[in-house]
Image (cartoon, rainbow, N blue to C red):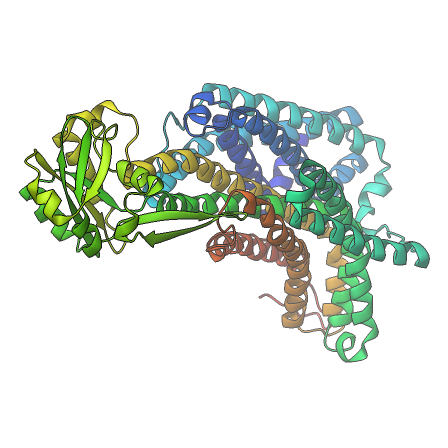
Length: 609
């Protein structure tokens, strides 16, 4: 009989259970996605030269586990909020406490395990989709990556089984130990707020001071190094907590004191709701703000490494294509590239010397990369005057474009007449630049490969001065970081937004009476919906704004090894905020559906919208 009543209760709240189940499915799917990568050491080691990558991902896996644990707590709170009145009614009807405990335990554990199994299957599919998206759309090379991982699957199922087992035990004991009246009136119990003015003012000052100190340390991380990063981490976490616990509440109190704002429509009610919510959600909002910064930072830096590939390639190579002894058919392919520069230098060589015609360098000066001191160093490309071609540094630059067997010979740049008098074997070095290297990547690759085929000595060396080979090297290095940043950013975003969503929804039951009262006294439902949108919007926007500020200051630390960490920053920000906005819309829709149920007006008419 109890199981029939339980199933009836679940059926009556099917939409809420579907939200809970889908959230748990996504949590386990994301956890599996991360674990499948963290346990794939071959993938991690083959896509980055950083030896500590495996350890870093293990630590990241632990962090995701902690976040998942917090998420399960809020999802579990949402579940118990929905069901506690039902359990109280069963007890009032004479159900034994032991049977109620068994039912609670079974419901929690079965829902959790079912969601974990479905989520793991979804995780395999999502992992494959993310892999294909990043490889195809972002043009990165990922090796040794497999979407399905037995090790990752076992860890996911075991981890969530333990979490839901603990949650089931806690739920069973928490319900049976509470008096029936307390369960029925749980959402009507007032929360008393005590606020000491001096301590409140002190928190405001400390919040601003801690954030200022943390931002200063991040800006000057080159000076303070590890100590600065440690101080920044501690002070920003503390500052974030105090900002939510004091500064935002102080700002809301100022708005409430302004009659022009507070007395307009339902603003006073909305501001009061927010003041209460932010006090209650301080720890949650602080955690969400920090995770928001981590997620957005990971996504921004990950995609920023994409820019580094082209930046570093451009700064490492003076020319887009090097052709040694090009053939007639190669010239036709080069012509199809519509080159902005095609410089050909005639070579004559004997056993120990290679000669160049000085007049050719007058007509087409050699381009040389120049480095200037700075953090990061300033890199420019300059044309070398012909009279400087016999300088050692310039000849070293020119020697880098020669064939391996030519590079050990002495270079002499001689006049036109001297060059014409030399009766030696003749060859050609052709250096090409195009308007857009990335747009011509495939034809340049084909020509570079053909150049290696035409000159067998190039096949014996691991490194040449071909720009495409430099691009492949940097792409192999940074694409792994790009993949990790994108992956981590999306994983953390989904978890933090889900945590915030369930925290808001778990408190929705206690708000039903307030909104019913407002509607019964004549408040239009449109105003109530507007109030809900604003309230939920602030709860999403506040940690989002603070997280963005954290990221904008934190990116300065990456200036030590990135040319411009802020380049194209709008791309990751747009991706992130679109996904974040989807969670806001979903939360608002669910919250509205819970608190604005159809109610009987004083006149006796039923409103159905």
